[in-house]
Image (cartoon, rainbow, N blue to C red; front, side):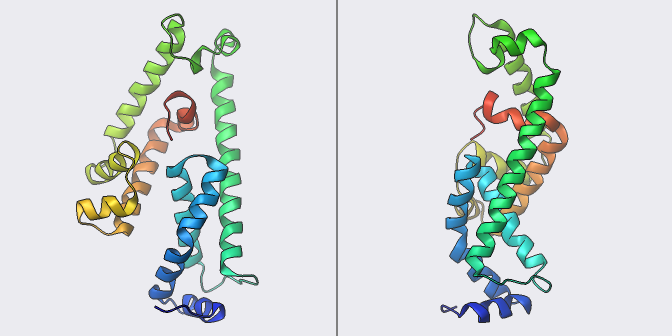
Length: 199
């Protein structure tokens, strides 16, 4: 697909032209991921937020009114989703902190790995066990994709090529995996960047 005029691209999207949506995705995805990463400092969350924002545009394509450029619209959508994500994570994190013993918070042991801080090691061990159970609860296909993304640090297109599936299927499995983690980890999910290096 050649470089279309902005209004033509928007019109094609409204008509449900998947080629237009694919063009929009390929043209803006990388830049939007960089913007999202600047907010959330996590590549997995950044990619998920961008994918959700672009997919949401496709879902509301018939009703949406874009008065600025598509890039500006998508940047705004990603920015708002990032801020909502950070606000939600902060609230969950504060809830987790409030449930910890006061002496634990005062000493900060839950943030450190040290034989001199056995409670910190115990808390981290407990969380790692919860994470392992949550990951194992993910459906096999989604778990395979998730492990390659999170533990092997592979990009979506690399995973798709390796497994012989489409990039959209990779994204679908990642969303399924994340939903399972949310179900099993709840508030702990917000603490992963602190306690487990979930980057």
